[in-house]
Image (cartoon, rainbow, N blue to C red; front, side):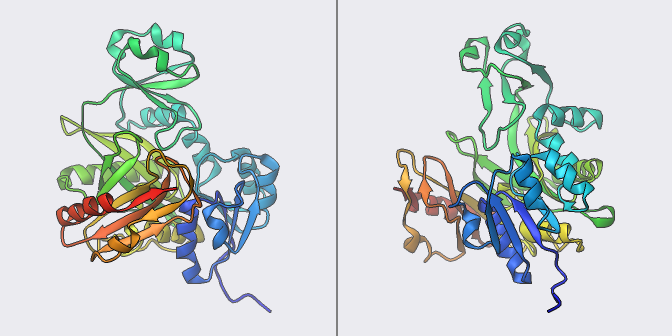
Length: 380
């Protein structure tokens, strides 16, 4: 029988919660989604059209998997880009493109990209070892050391207040960024589409967990003046244009005490800073990514209702088979939307889900989110 669904078969490298939420959106269109991940209990295994156990860093595994789909995307950027380049040569549509992933996988190359195109970013220097850090002028401190590769969600990052902290430093190739006199952190998600079309979601404000170094609360839309958010959205579109990216690109910004907008980092995939869009915007970041990689026009990114997102993290001191405490109580609160990721094992500060609270104002939504945080617990 001839296939009537015009949507290409989509493959995802990575089977975590980002892939899971992408699939939850894509199945509304009866799309076939294949997933490859090394973990047989990965969140995507429960809902993918086809699941393949495999290492997305292994050349042959990625090549074999990619040849079974029409469009290949990622939910984690740390994948084998050499295999993606070969698949592109063979006619598989790879979004984001292998060239984009190769650049973003390396934090040093990211920084040089910003410098090349006069995109505002904090001062930086490359080092190969602790001894090179020790030889720097004291004026470089405080700073953040970031491993060139493999870091995410605060991993692979060290704050160095002075040379007295060198015992904590990585003895590996990395970059040092001068610490910014920070007022706040915020983010913009931009999507690249066919025919050079770029679309942004309204900026969001972020509050980071004091211990886990990842986003704890996110409020949308941002409370910043439009003069600042418009500037950030313009920068986001400029970056997307320079990369010629297809798909979602999340860009995290610093705002310093002089109200200067500074690019921190970017991620070429759906991102934690866009989870609220499922309830808070006309289209979600997952819908927008889907639209982009299958060749559709971008959807309407307008805010439907103010929203606050709370990451649901594993409680400190608990590791093992997951148990959720308080779900019944928070489900009775108006505007509370629970998204659990299907992870069977909890660990301290592991992302187990998120909760989006919608309300008539971000202030009201934040008050409810703090109440929810005091109730829900993830234990073993």
